[in-house]
Amino acid sequence: MASALSSEKINVKPEVGSLETVSSRGLQVDVRDAVVQFGDLTVLRDLDLTIPSGQFLAIVGRSGCGKSTLLRLLAGLERASQGTVSLGGGASAGLRPDVRVMFQDARLLPWKTVLDNVRIGVEGGDKAKALEALELVGLADRAKEWPSVLSGGQRQRVALARALVGDPSLLLFDEPLGALDALTRIEMQQLIERLWLERKFTAVLVTHDVSEAVALADRVVLVENGIIAQDTSIALARPREKDNGFTHYESSILNRVLKRNQTAASNEGFSI
Amino acid sequence: MKSPAARNWKTGTLSIGLEWLIPILVVVIWQWLGSAGVISQRILPTPASVVEAGWKLIRNGDLFVYIGDSTRRALLGFVIGGGIGFILAILNGLAPLAEKLTDSSIQMIRTIPHLSLIPLIIAWFGIGEQGKIFLVALGVAFPIYLNTVHGIRSVEPGLIEMGRTYGLKGFALFRTIIFPGALPSILVGLRFALGIMWITLIVSETISSNSGIGFMAMNAREFFQMDVVVLSIVIYALLGKLSDWLAKLMERSWLQWHPHFRPKK
Ligand SMILES: Nc1ncnc2c1ncn2[C@@H]1O[C@H](COP(=O)(O)OP(=O)(O)O)[C@@H](O)[C@H]1O
Ligand SMILES: [Mg+2]
Image (cartoon, rainbow over all chains, first blue to last red):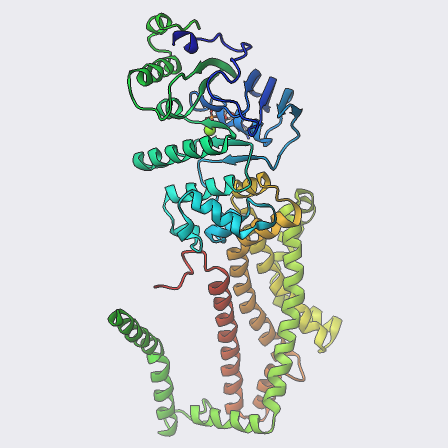
């Protein structure tokens, strides 16, 4: 257990597919020595990250550490000034139809009905497929409504349907549940986990909630000072419960994020 | 189930009744003052004689010719000016280079009250059609331009980014996200522009014209037909109301998604 927790800084390749059965559906992600700058501000410096196909990866870190920037780099929304990002083995050139992003705000078009919003995600705007995706998130009966009448959680479910309808191989989440109430969050987490298990895409979830990261991810990485500062594989069976093992992972990652209890953390296997 | 609908109908008619109460009262008192001889017919004709004058002009067909002439000028000017304003706004809203090049010039021209150009325009075009259409176009172009630019700028960047991640670009991105996002603001501009369109037309037709409603009014004034003068004022008011109603209708049908414009249930 402890060995799964510890992993030296960056440059140490995580064990590929050690936990979940690796599917061929998901895209493998390789980030090599990536540098992302905004003017004088260097947000990511020589960052390395390999995500095996089909893995559920969570990215945690303090606010402003560059989690969103890393995710946007994977999405093709930011460019690396140095280094490379390759998806599925080939160098990735910007936006791709098999990569979808969900943001903290649902980003639904208020002038399109729920169904038409989902249709944006299908090539050719196939209605039947869009309706199917809405059924998947349990909102088929709201297809004809305007997004403005939906609750925050429902809007995120529509956004999820829109992201899923094109059958992506890599799904990127940027704190999609951050604005939701606790109960809705848990429901959405279960929904996301279920869909990931069914569809076997590669998932990357940025979250400020360590507990959420431990609940969902195969592996949690911490971004700090522009690099992956900690890399933890979560060896817990699914569906996950808040048992001893769970809280162990949760508190050790949280302590590392907060730089608290250094000695206790090193006792548990940290060496940072 | 039936009672709320019935109540809605009742409050509906009541509110319409309230809206019209004061105008109807004004007309009734006006008629009464006129027929009692308190107000001279030469100063302000009674509503009845205005209606009579209108009926006469309808029967000999002149009224339709005048209204037709004015409407044609108004619409032609509106389409030309609105079209130019809209296209410039889209260029400047989307292409920073175009904006750098033209925006400050447009802002400078905007400060000139377009009606102050009337003497110049009479000198250029005489009292022909072009002058009036030119003035209307000039007056209409700015509200459309400004509100369209504002609308395009106020489209949420997050939505545009979302569109790009879903592979929308070029015209598809414009049609799906930028234009609908700018539409509420564009329609505000449209409503302003319709108001300016009629005012410009009234002024320019009154000053120089040989047809149209403004001409009808000025011609009648020379022959002391005060009823026709008042009739033309009423017609301008009705046309203004009609275009305002059209603008509202557009808002209701195109902005149904917007909570502000959704019909109350
Ligand atoms: N487009 C941008 N231009 C300039 N600075 C940016 C931009 N995007 C992000 N940043 C900066 O980069 C840093 C990391 O941002 P971000 O990745 O959003 O952090 P977070 O981990 O909270 O998601 C922040 O200091 C932020 O201000
Ligand atoms: Mg962020």
